Structures are given as C-alpha cells and as structure tokens.
Length: 296
Image (cartoon, rainbow, N blue to C red; front, side, top):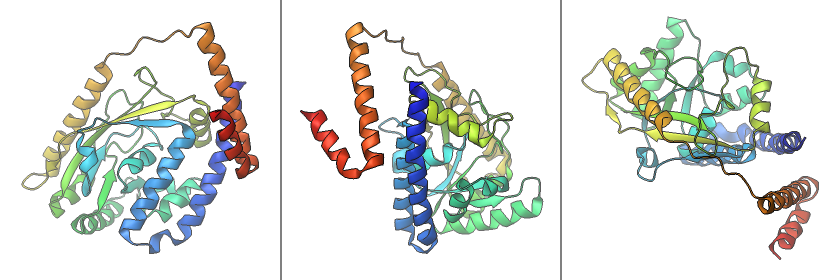
C-alpha cells in the first residue's frame, strides 16, 4: 500500500513537471546553445529527483570534463536519455517510434532529438550528414548503437553506421557504460524497458520503486581519425563491454537489517514525507511551515 501511495504522489509531481517542460519546450528551439543545455540539464535532474534516481560517477571520471564529441553507450531504458542529460546535456539520435510516444515523444522532438527510421539506408545517410555538421560545430551528441534496449547484463551487437560521422568530422568518441542497480550495488531490472513491456508499465515500475541507482563509467575518449567505422565500433564495444563486466563483478554490500528503533524512526520519516508532499501539492506556503516544524 505504501509503495502505491508513493507512486501516486510521484505521478502527481511528474504531471506538474511535464507541464513545466511543455511550457519550456515551446520556446526551447529558439534559445542559444548554452541556455538550451542548462534547461535540458535542469529539467532532466528534476525528473530524476521525482523518480528518486541517484546517479553515481567516480570523481576522476572523464564524463565530468566531457563537452563535445560523440557519446556511445549501451541502452537499457528510455530513462537513459535523462540520466545522461542530467550529467552532460546532449542531443540524441533515437528511433522514429519515440516521436509517437505520448508527451515524451513531443518533448524529445522539441529538444531537437534526431530521429532515424530503422532499416532505411536513406534515413541513415540523412542523419549522418546532420551529425557531421553538428559535431564540427562542437556539439555533444549521443547514440545507442545496439539499436534496441537490453536488460543491461551485457552489451548487444553494435551497428557501425552511426559511428561514421565521428570519423568524417574528426570528433572524439566517448564510450560510456550504464548500469542500473539497487542501494546495495546489485543489478536492477526496475528500469529495463524490454520484451513486450508497454511504456506505461515501464513508467509505473520506476514510479513504484523506493529508489534506484544508476552508475555511469566513461572510458578515455577515442580518436576516430585514421580508422574505419568497423574497427572503431569493435573498439568502442570492447571498452563498454569490459567496463560493464567489471561493474557487474564489483562486490555487493550485505543487506542491513534494521533494529526496532530504526524501524520506528523510518515510519516517522515516511509520515513526515507524505505530509510534506501533500503540502507541496496543496499549497506552496504550507511546505515551508512543514519544513520549519520538522527542523524543531
């Protein structure tokens, strides 16, 4: 029952956040690049906060200094886009079906996502020309070369066609491994958008989860010049696959068994959490009063 209530509260916050995003999206394409990046990062961070998704990156990870080039990563969920944008704002190449998703598809289109029709060579050629131009202008782009989502246990087959623009533009290629896990570090399927799962069912799974951790690990950038796309693809796939395997091999923390006192304290915190959420939804001024009361 508690998880259902949490999911419903989150759904209400999500509706408000999407409404805010729709308002921003109307003018978004006319803003300058720097402003678009800030908006994209801020909105994505807010979305992850609603879902209680926590991003984990190492302090010295190359991801923190990444500003331009082609990001290549494994693909697990529609949530991947917002996880990456919360760290480094970027434009994505996505399958054309995404554009037809309710609300999210329109938001992705307004965020200048590049849509490709799978299995059509002409569509791929058109997108590649656009990618080369954008990379030469110093933009940060991202692709999912698997062409589909997986459970995240290992990487699937990488299609090489979308890596050609990095070679043509002489842009750096940034392999990044994504892994969703629970608070103990165990692999999690909560966000996996796989098999015949509907978008609504996937959304409800994430809304219902107490919390979700996602770990990002970037390997050093690759120089795409002087190579061909097949060798580049094999190298990128090896880097991501090896990194993902190392993440899965990391030790899992033992579960903590709460004492009776900790259990009572958790119940009190949960009640206060629901009260504060109700205040936010009912009237903003009440949220401040709730926060002052909790601090006493």
